Image (cartoon, rainbow, N blue to C red; front, side):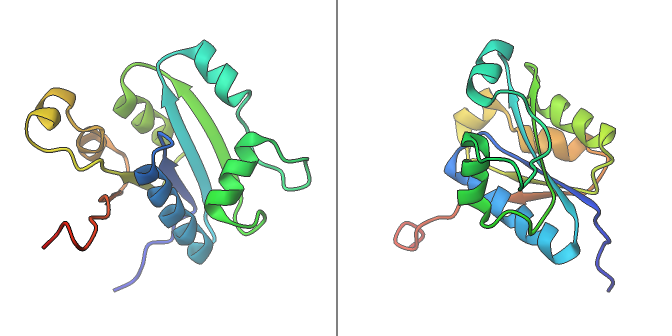
Length: 153
C-alpha cells in the first residue's frame, strides 16, 4: 500500500491539551512527508482574536519570537523543521470554517482532536469533528483523548 503524498496538512486547535496532542501529531506527519503545516484556530469574536493572537500569517524563523511562535515552539519543537502557517478564522460555525479553510488552501489532510464527549453533552454540543468528517474535501484524522491506564481498567 502506498502512502499519500501530502503537501499541506491542517491541524485545528482550541488550545486545549487534546488539541495540542493533535497539533504535535500533525507536525510529525508534516516532518515525515515534507508537508507544510497549517495550524488553525476558529473564534467567534474578532476583537478577542486580535487581542489574543494579533495578525496571523506565516512564521518566519528569522523573525524575533512572539507569544504565538513561543507557543508553537514549545508544542512543536525547533523552528525550521517544517514550514508552518498559523491562521485565525472568525465565525460561529467552527466546522464550516475549518472545511472552508481546507478547501481554500487545498489541504490534503486535516488532523483534529476529539474531546471524548458522550451522552447528553455530545447530544447538546454536537461534534465538530463529525461535521468536518461529513463535509471535508480531504481525509480527516481524528485523535482521541488519551485515557489514563488506571481509568481504563
